[in-house]
Image (cartoon, one colour):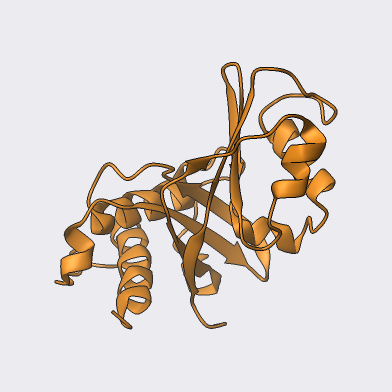
Length: 183
């Protein structure tokens, strides 16, 4: 459906506006896709700078619910930022990413894993023991080198950039993404 992205962006922005008291009720959009379980991320930016990003790696609730929850979590619960204020909403740009199911990668070494990464295509989930992190494919724009991408992903998981062990697991996914036009 060509309007899917438009609908998802509207649902995300409206969910934040309602939480800020700027909208009376959640908007209703009725499209079959919105009732199917899906995994999404909602990214908020201001003047090109990250302002919040929260999402789901697995599809466990209807797409419209996942978008609304992740939009509010990105706006109000991203621990890296203070909660979004009503004054900030007009200058905040919303981007939504619809994730494909993650697929486990098979590799024999870090060099083998790095060689399999597809810059600008793959989102990666890094796991080692009880540590876990992910980068959306959009992060390749800031970290185009696979080794740098992986090093930052390890650091995001709370591990040294040089960490590699038998417990490392990698999964990849792709996204369809939509971003609001500059305001």
